[in-house]
Length: 494
Image (tube, rainbow, N blue to C red; front, top):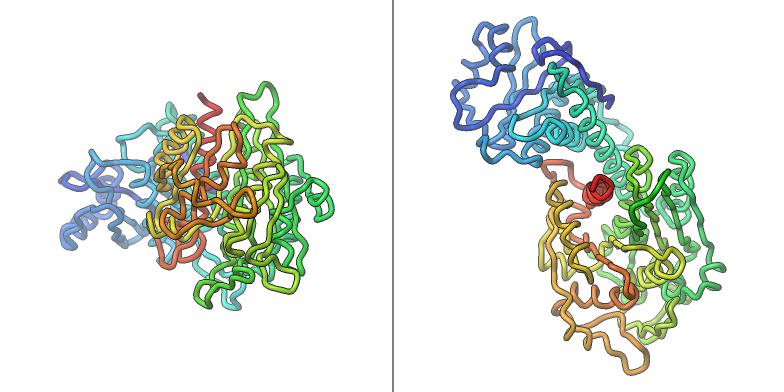
């Protein structure tokens, strides 16, 4: 979808369809719709009254006027309740309706008037692009209906710069999310550790980033026994990926992003059930998010040095696989008893955390992982969990998630639960009891972050959806790409 800004009123923009918003509980139509209604001889208002359109958030209707583009009207809810997420969802619903009507080009206003123009423009473009995502790469019959051009109407030249900045941010955030969704939705026979390494190399080439991919032997020499233990059962060799964005000029801080990169999780010798294994191509959602963020950074240009790490491996059962009761040695010499081979993500993240602390020496670390079913039980399928050893970092991430519309909830790191990780034969066990499993996993990771400010995002619930959502169809969601980009760009502006 090509996105452009048109310095005209909405009713003056040439397009196959136009999308306009209406607030609830208000009798008068917005000026944009008043002009469109006048062109249609009052038929638009009559149609809305006949349909009893209440302008509830997400409500959509459309109208065909003779000799005029199709008009799609979206509800914005009460004016006082306007948020960026309301605008994202309204734009997504409006663009989907226009697409389904066969529109190739769509004109949209910068919906609402309660928020600054930049914020509204970003939300509208994000929603328009995210809401029309589809994945048909492996289907013989491709989707024919698609919006090819989005024209954002902004007649006020004084606000053009703000709107242009918002459009740029919205397009960048949404396209990064698409990139992550495409990686996650693809099958594990295509997206394996070697493929992630190739994608990282392509990202580095396109975005002019630094990249280093460590092979098994190099990881062994660095002492990554936990990561290599997980990878031992697969015929596909593991890859440890390190991407770097170093901004021009003085940097404000150095941030490490770590994405869990288990490209398929069978559970290892503690084999998952058939139903539990079916969707495990998505166990690299954290890695996809980190790669997507790194790819987007050059266009955003924050004065923050960012390093993206992915310990990519498959967790498979074989004669070479680790067994329950085996003891692995992490990069920092911590020994770990394997209580369950299906708690493999934290083992790979442990060595990635050690690598970050030792080799990158960051100001802060954020890891992203589809880590525990316990977090899904606690927070459901629409909310990620946050655990952190630094409340300032946690607060900034919570604010970024709120701004981006990606739900995030902080869970406590309860020190008394650390005793659940005790082992009789090693420094730690990789699992604890069933209760508080998300917290126990966080405490395990905390051991490897050292004194560096660190936050863990458990995205096991919202990384993949089994039903259509307001901002995307069934499948990968791309969470938390927009939260991380918001965080990094906000830090850059602070």
